[in-house]
Structures are given as C-alpha cells and as structure tokens.
Amino acid sequence: MKTASQLTALLLFASLASAQNAARGAEGRSVSASSDAYSIAKFSVIGGEINMLNGLNSEGEIIATVVMLDQSSVGAVMPTMGVFVSRKDAFQDIGRFGGLGMWGAAINNAGQVIGSGETVPRDPAAPPAEGPPSHAFLYDHNRLQDLGTLGGKSSRANAINDSGWIVGQADTANANHHAFLYRNGKMQDLGVLGGLNSEALFVNAAGQIVGIAEASVDPLGGPGSQPPRHAFIYLNGRIQDLGTFGGDNCMPGGINAAGDVVGSADVTREITGNGTFRASTRHAFLYRVGKMTDLGTLGGLNSRANAINDAGQIVGASDVGAVIHRPDSWDLPVQHAFLYTNGKMQDLGAIGGKNSVATAINSSGQIVGYLSPDFSFVNDHAFLCDHGKMQDLNVLIGEKVLAKIGIKVLVSADGINDRGQIYGRAFDVNGLKVAYVLTPAKTSFLTFH
Image (cartoon, rainbow, N blue to C red; front, side, top):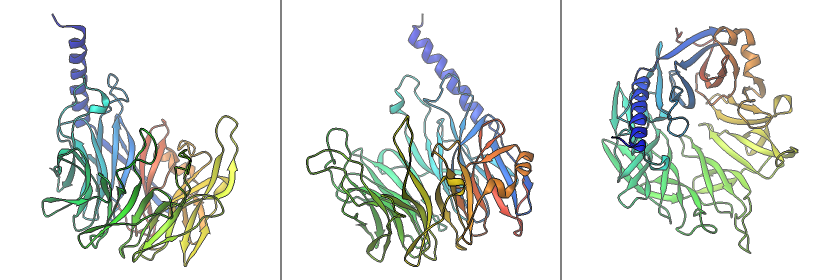
C-alpha cells in the first residue's frame, strides 16, 4: 500500500510529466496590423504568457521567456518556462534540456540565442529552493548546446556578441559562482575582485566584458547582509574594479563599442558610523578610459544610466526632487527619463505628469522607455522620444490598429535597434502579457501571419 506522501509524489510526477508534454507542444503565434507610421506584430503563445523579453536583433527577431499557464497542481512555485524566438513567419519554442525550466537571455545579429535551462526533471518532494541544476545554453541553427559549468552545479548565460562570445556566471567546485567567457568551445573563469563571487553581464564587439563582483568577503552589516558589490571591466586578461563615488555598491547598465561603461554607483554608505542601515544614494555614471564620471541628477537624490549608444549618448532615469504622496504607503519619488550628451543631463519630461524611464537608445538617438503613474507595470505606457519629442506609443499607433490584433495597451518599450524597430510587452484584450515589434513604415519589414 502506498502512503499519502507517496501518492502525492506520484500525482505531482504525473502533473509534471503532463506539463512537460504540454510545454513541448506549445504553439507560438504572431499577427500583424499597420498604422501610418508603423507596422505592428503581436507575438503570443497558446496556453502561455510572456514573462520576460530578452532581446531584439538587427533583423527584428526577438527572444522571449514564456510561462505556461496550465500548471494547476504546480502553481506559481514551480511553473513551466519556455524560450521562444521569432523566425520569419513563426514564433517557435527552442526546446529543453530535460527539465521544465528554460530562461532566455539574449539574441545576437546572427540569430544565436543564449540563456539557461534545467538539465533534469524536478523532484516534487524537494523544496523550491533546491531546484534541479540549470546550465547555460547556446541555441544555434536549431541546435541546443549545453555550455556546462566551472565544476559546480549550475550556470547561466547573460550576453553574446556577434562573434559568438558568450558571458555569464557559473558555479565552481567550491560552490561559489564566477564570471565566465565562453568561446571556441571552452568556458574560461574570469576570476573575482576581493570577494568570492562574480558575474559577467555584457560583452561588446571588441570582446570587452562588464559585470559585477563582490568587492570583499565581509558583509556590509549584520546577519543576512551581503558584501559590497562593484562593477568591473575585463580587459587584457585582467578584471578591473570600476569603484564607486564613496559608497558601497556599483551596478553596470551597459557598454558601447568603444568600451564606455554606464550604470549607477553609490555616493553614500549603506551603513552609518554607528552601524545602522540606511538607504544609499546612487548616481548615474560614465566610465571611460579608466575614469568614472558622476552624471548627477535632475534635482533629486538618485539617478541611474540604463544604456549608451556608440555616439556616447546615455539614457536612464533620475529623481527630479518631487514626490508622490501615498497615504497607504511611503512617498514615491518622481522620476523622469533623461538624455545625457555633451556633458549635460537633459530632462525628457513625462507625458501627463507621470513618471518616465528611458530603457534604450539606438545609433540615431531614438529613445524608448515607459511612462508610469505608480511603477506598478499594469498602469504603464510605452513611449518613443525622437528628436526631442516624446510620444505615447499607444497614441502613435492608435487604439483601432491595436484592437485589430487584440492588443489592449502597449505597456513597455524594452529596446530599439538601428532600423528603428521597437520591441516591448503589452496586455492583450484578455489581460495576458504578449510581446510586440513595431517596424517603421518607411523600412522594409517582414509580415507575420
């Protein structure tokens, strides 16, 4: 006779097997419509919902991480995840290693896709924190390749350049995780700064690598606190600390072809002289030829740089000095998107008095991002700022055009390529998250069916 726990385990195994089969058969779909300014293509998955968008390349191909919605017995604890990529007239699942979880990370201009995936089925009796190992992958020419680890359990890939150099993070034999570079079939350990762990986040065409690493082994505060983390750049076989503005932490946001790095760095310490914790103040930075420059703010305490193009134009978001008073919660600082160029930070404003955040900029200086009254995502609107004029993409495309393909609202604009194609997330008429790609009408484009 089987015990209740054994029966529960069997039922969970059965549901996981069913979920795996359903995920393998998941079907991606794309439909399109046109306005005077743009063609819009919507990407969705039957039985799934877009969880994250992971990249847009020069051909207008996107990669998305999708959560399957039919896992009633597993629920939100262990959802089935898949990676989908758009190819010509299809939105296709790239497959799995053997587990239920696949997460996308990036796509390069050659169409190579990277991410990480669970390598074995999940044990339903194991706690969620003790999930199966996941390994970094490369998906190229319809082939899924396991990139392995640095001797430990898991790894994940974060970025890939057009030469196929892949960077990310991998566990070592002593259970720490180190930044890696994968090229020519080999995974190389990039080392650490003064701490035990590191992770590579970006790599440019020249092979310059940017990431984040613990700056010491000592935690900032009491039990449960983490060591300080600094951005690094890997050059000429050496990992170099970018430092801070006197605070504890520094987070990179991107790197351009010239090796200019942007992000945000603390200007105040998280731990005061008497050992108490306080929220640190952070400023956007530019790191160029060994020097870190504080880009300042738009009048508030904090700012962050999210992207830089090859002309050195930087975009991000900054507090402006005002706050939104909320009686049921803490006050919310008002943020505006900015463009930093020629040594000055320019306020891009916010339509309708909302907050705005710039997420990306292309080589022509076109900027995309999102408008938000409360940073809840569900109330956000995507925007485009071109030649200094900010436009809500929902207004630009038009409600009737969006309705033709079942889109209720364009919520975010996550990136823009040098053809002016914009990709982001939207809610469909059923309230599910879908992906979209806008292609300028004056540019030749693929039509999705």
